[in-house]
Image (cartoon, rainbow, N blue to C red; front, side, top):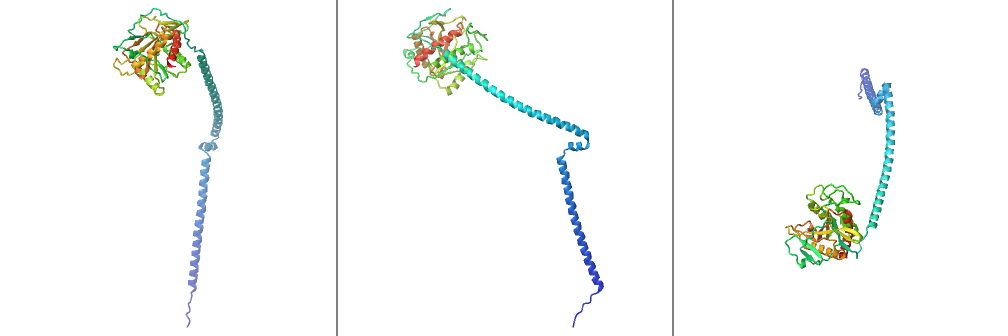
Length: 384
């Protein structure tokens, strides 16, 4: 027996219509989304184009395009900036060239200065005249101040201002000088002398001047030059210790000496002075050596009698006696009697530290320079 399905025409038409509508709907939806994507891409592209235009054109460019007057002004300003930029470049180039020229000139000036200094140094070395021996000497002090002394070792006279009794053992100069480095400085750097035709100067105080070319500092330079001719290592400090204030001079010079000793160990430490004004400003202790007039020198040796720690004072005294003993042999009268005092004068800093007073207010600078020639010879004799 067969089953037969009967299809109605109405149902068939209904199904066909539904399928058609469904297909149409799908087609519409597809077209809609496809158009939206294209529109989005177009909008994105337009935004990018606008952005690029804004990036490539400033507000001034937009104004240029809108207002011709603004464009003209901006164009002029751009030209002016180009000129300024070109001028800046040229200026920079010129400055670079000028700087290079200045550097070359500066180097040439430094070179010339060094050459001049070398020439002056050579001339100084050539001009240094060493002392000779076997010449007659004579003390020719004008307006002499009476010599006072109360102790003596051989021909060496000593004015002992302490309460110490100086024994023969204390006076015997039985020392051996091993460290021959020499330090010279000036506690009273501004002490000057009587102005002369050869060395005229304008005082800035009572026999004082801040121009160290006319003070005892210049005498120290001469002693340095002389000693160097004999091969000694000499440190000469030319610092101001009594300017702008005279008070505290020894405190100032002590700092200098202690600092120098850290890098330049020395046993022989000379504080070079000029004798004080005293009661006679025309006092000029002078000795004639050969045909030259030289200022007399005086050792001032400090002790611990004033209460300050000073273990070296007897060594200092022996050194002064050793030098002066040789001086009395070679150039009698070059030295005045040694002064032994109760003060320390920073002489605790070295085994053979001392003060040497070269000349007095009545002496001229040239007389003091001459005496350094003979002092250097004496020192060399005891250190050979």
